[in-house]
Image 1: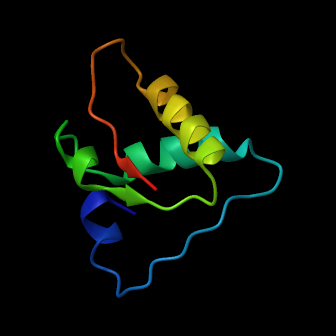
Image 2: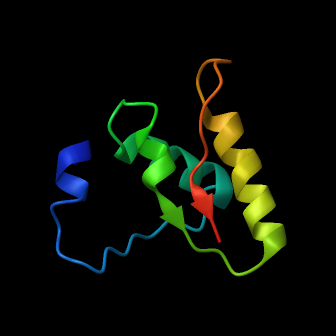
Image 3: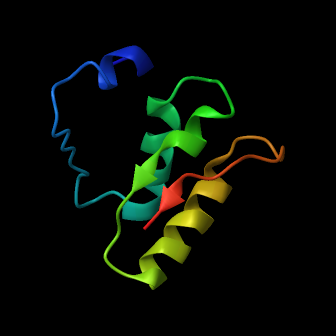
Amino acid sequence: MSADDIFAAPTPRIYTIDPSRPFLETLARGIRDSLPPDPLSIADTLVYVPTRRAARALANAIARSKPDAAASLMPRIR
């Protein structure tokens, strides 16, 4: 599925992660891979998580998922 196809689907968009995969790393990589290569596109993304601890952990995983060491914006995590 390309970056354009993911947002063409009707809402709600629900995805699953295989239980054998590391959850946060897989989610962070999936968020980055599903967005256009524009560095500002991730700033328009909103991710809901159940706790502040989960929000911090996801933010760290997203920061680690960046393939190069360049600075990047983060999605809104609530």
